[in-house]
Image 1 (cartoon, rainbow, N blue to C red):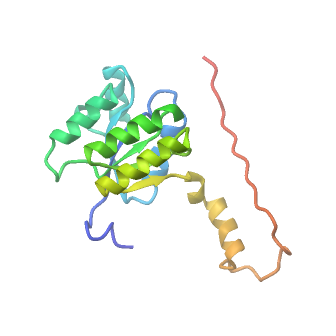
Image 2 (image 1 turned 180 degrees about the horizontal axis):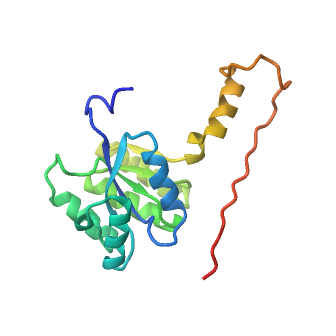
Amino acid sequence: MPLNPPLNRRLRMALPGGGGTGFIGKVHRTATTLDGRVELVSGAFSSDVDRSRETAADFGVDPERAFNSFEKLIDDELSRPAEECVDFVSIATPNWLYFPMAKAVLEAGFNVMCDKPMTVSLVQAEELAELVDRTGAVFGVTHNYTGYPLIQGHRALWDGEAEWRAGAFGLCLLVGQRHFAVMQMV
């Protein structure tokens, strides 16, 4: 598979969130880098700058591109030459922050990959859609479980693409999956 034509390089991603004990940011960081087509190059991993830099080092990110606020991350990206800037910002923070962050990213001229739910209201979603139309930026909403092998296998069965004999399981009416996370009490 070609590497992100016409760029022929990995896409550069910034990630606000995803440090410390946060769960979903780690999921997104892992999922976006599984196929080697995306690299994490910048982030706001903690409100404590030292902790953010430690996390950056753990993630293979230059600690100089680790920030203690989303605003500082965006300001830094805007100051960089185009060949160093991120291609998109993946927002993996608590849901109530998706809208203000996505709006700021779009207004700054960057593409957005946002976790679901995109916003907490239809009014906010419509405002983001208008910004996308006005800026020409790309806006994606993740449904990250679609990339899991179990789900892809189910999809292949559903679409009749699996190499198993047709009808081996009878008529499929529903495919379900459960996700369990182990929470550590501190």
